[in-house]
Image 1 (cartoon, helix red, strand yellow):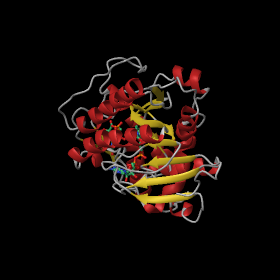
Image 2 (cartoon, helix red, strand yellow):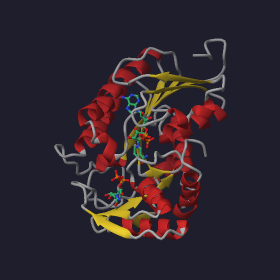
Image 3 (cartoon, rainbow, N blue to C red):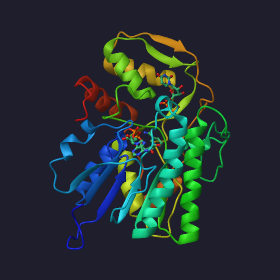
Length: 322
Ligand code: NAD
Ligand code: UDP
């Protein structure tokens, strides 16, 4: 990549950079003056998400699967590669675990070799179906190790273990972000997650698919807020490792979300109830006291404002540009 030893630009690797969050992060890092290397195997991400960055001399795109080693010279690594939607991570669960675990080993090995700082995109799923509410980082979680969500939940938990062992054993500078449900432009229309499903269905006038009774809750963070937090986390002092919860503490039932989407799109869609997937967490809300303290961060975009931006994106065709 460009930006060798004659450049003063920070060289940053973003794995999963062609995905929903990754593409926004690449954009943000370029705006911050970094040289960005985006590595992605396009499993759930698409070139459309980063097509507008390709002419930029400080952006480089590489087709790469993180389950294989990678040899590049970088200063910082954001490890985001992993399908994130239950539909997609359950499609090939063995590959999902490999991506989380082998991907973490490969990226940690790279960080060790080139002495890079490395951030892991972990997840609120490490809390499973939580018995503690809201969830603080000190809660160890309630995760089924053998269910349909385990490939993702346990894969991410093992990745956290690897990050902390590399930190303790090899002195690596690590940052672990536990990301709660994040949404916004560039979610794939067939992503399968609740916000994109509801918005796409409402805009088409198709039935809104509520799983179960819709009384389960989630806390939704707009992608710009999340990217701000990731960049701040990477910039924290070396001793600060996290894990740190990143999300919006506003908590909504899935029915409330459906009603908001219908109102904001002025859709005539009706609700249809579908079977609740196995092990679907009943409630989820981040305790973000640690992020407030360590990153001086809290989300600034509420659900209505974020949904309006997301709806505008899908109304315009949902083609990667926003
Ligand atoms: P996404 O599916 O849009 O992005 C994931 C990206 O990783 C895609 O571009 C995909 O092609 C790529 N990828 C998958 N397997 C790969 C592999 N083996 N090698 C290289 N690239 C690979 O999902 P997202 O929402 O942008 O999620 C990004 C990261 O954030 C993921 O690690 C996810 O687990 C984490 N996360 C997201 C959320 C959320 O609500 N969006 C919540 C918690 C955690
Ligand atoms: N959900 C739903 N309808 C959909 C998609 C999802 O009711 O079309 C529900 C799902 O059962 C879960 C919540 O919305 O309770 C969030 O699902 P998502 O897949 O977005 O993320 P999760 O937090 O479950 O990983």
